[in-house]
Structures are given as C-alpha cells and as structure tokens.
Length: 454
Image (tube, rainbow, N blue to C red; front, top):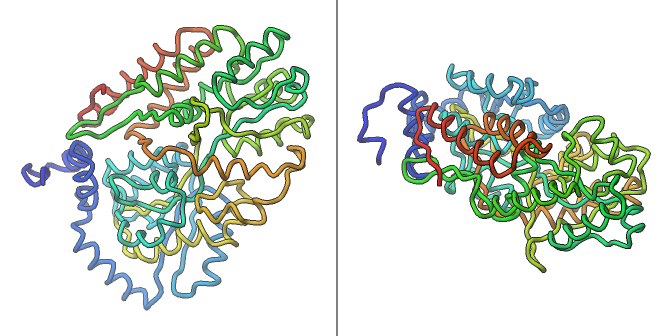
C-alpha cells in the first residue's frame, strides 16, 4: 500500500497519507490511524473492553440534540447489556467538533458522536473515525441509499444516518390562485411563472434565492448531479464550476437579474416576514423548513402548500438534500458492535424515531420512518395536507454521488460571504463560485494535502 513506502513522521504525515491516496487506501489508513494501532489491535482492545465491563458494554455519546437524551434513556431502560451515557456538548460548529477531535487526539474520545454529514470527511482526514463497515453491513437496507452514502466513503461505513433533508417546493396557494398557477413541474416552468408573477406585481417575488445558505446552494447542485469534491489518486479534486453546478448558477443568476426572486439574507426576521405577508410566493427548501415556516409565519397558516421539487428534465425524478446528520463512531471505540447496535436502534426503532420526530422535527433516514403515525398526520398549517408523503418520495430521489470535502467550515463561510454578496447584486454568482473554489483548494493545501481544480 502507498502509505507503507513512506516513513511515519507524526500526525501531519499520517493525515496527508489518509487523504492523498485513493479512496480505498484512505479508508484503510484511517482504520490504521497513527494513534490507535491497527485493526487487529483495535479488535483485541475491544474484546478486552467487553471483558472489563463485566458483560455490559459502556458507551459514551456526545451530541447537542436534546431529544437524543430521551432516546438514550429509553434505550438504557430496555437494553441491560449496553449502557449509554449521553453528554451534551456545544453544537458542532460552535465548539462541539473541536472538542471531539481534541478527545480523539488525547485517546479519551467517546465511542459515538452526533455529526452533520458535511463534517464526516473532515474527521476522516484527521484519522478520527472508526470503520464499522463489518458491524453495519447487515442493517444497510433499513436506510435510504442517499442517507447511507453520507456516512460512508469508498464503501466503508463510519456510522449510522439519523435524518435527512429531502427537498420540496413550498408555495402560497393564494398567490398561485390569483395568477392561475399550479406548482411547476420543471425549472423552465418555474422561470416562466416567476416572470408572470413579478411582471404582474413587481412587489411580489415569485420565490426566494437561498444562496447565502451554503447548504441550500449545495442542495440545488446536488439535484442536478453536481459534485464539488472528489478524492482522485493523491489529490482532492475541487470543482464548484462543474456542469451540474454551472447550470444551477446560470439559472438563478438570470432570475436574480430580472429581480423575479428575492435575495434577502436567509433566516432573518425580514426574510420570514415576506413569507408571512405574501410578498414571496414560494421557496424550494428542505423538510425542516416546515417547522421554521410555522414558527415564523404564523399568520399565514392555511395559505401554504407543498409540492415536489421542480425537475430539470420533464418527467425527471431527482431531488436535492439540505442538511441531515448521523451518529459517527469515533476512533478508539472499544465496543464497535454495541456502538452500532445503539446507533441503529436510535435511528430505526419506532418509539425512538417518534421521539426524534416530535421533539426535534427530524425526517428519518430509516425508510420505515415514513410510516410512523407522527409522519402520517395531516398538517393544519398546510391546509390539513399530508405533506410528508411528498418528502417521502423526495428522500428516495436524491442522487447518491454527492461528496463533501475536508474543509467544509471554510467552504461554508466563503460561500455565505461570496454567494450572499453576489445574490444581493454585488458581483456575479459564477465569479463567487470560482472564488470559493480557489480558496477551498488553498485551504486543503494548507492542511498539507494535495488539491487541484478538476
């Protein structure tokens, strides 16, 4: 293997090796790790840990979702052979991830960690994840292919998916009725309707451009077969101007130029106000936007509905994904079998999922989750429609080829800044994406890894 031909010179060299090689070698190297020994040693330590625990597997689980604590309590009450201790940490981007990485380096990390899908590669290049492909193979069929792929790299699995962010189109039924419109089936129809609405009433934006939310922009590219990152040979190839993304960029630039869509910063009071007063007539967004809309546009109850995401090709069945997370198994876990058993239970047990749906508003990654009573209830806010039926279809239609990169914190900040400014008229979206591609390549190189446009 490539790594065996080079001397080991500390964590920097080990980390470079972990990503600079092919994906297959990457997974092998992170399984080896520079701090925790090889697979055999890890298995021996796991066996010793099982014996030391007196037959009860002890697992630590770090996360920030308050609903997870309820799930852990329910699991402990019904599984005397495994004991899970849930420790609440700051949300990942606000310190939780840094604490987890520090714990891995200090050899005192928890077995399990809440982790956004976009963060998995960053932990992988740090050698901070445990390969649990063998332990998880038998349960793969329980989960949507798209969600499972987000916890896997090159066929190796590093945890169990919890939730996804399937995308649909939210629209104001009153505005659509006023203009004799039905939900558009294609993006071409979406653009024509945008012209119709804005020409008839310039005070109304047909939809909201969510580009200063980096995950929204990624979700749009995802639907169109885009892929921003690809480990190739010894190099991370980065392309935010590849054909799928370029088409999305050109499309939204045209709508912005016509002022047919709003460019207000997302998740601000003014942004929500327009959804409430009808001056924005639609939004293409994830399932968790339902809760945000209900909370921040209360007076618009009964005026919103949900339809499938528009397609690039007539009759197409592809959607994007915005958000979602899983339960990752961190390097050094001594009870990987028990860790996977718990993570699978939390993500697929009906009682656990009901708790997570009702208390945290997730959309389950487990396909059986769509059949929960909590997912079948009509929504009063959305005109008593069973909106989750649409998201169920969407969740199964997200392409599985999307790959996150190893510097997503930097990517997120740069996209928010540059695309946000371009969306507001200070520059062009294409230039913004090209700029972020450049800063991303440099950020990866600054980690001691190879990166290039491609």
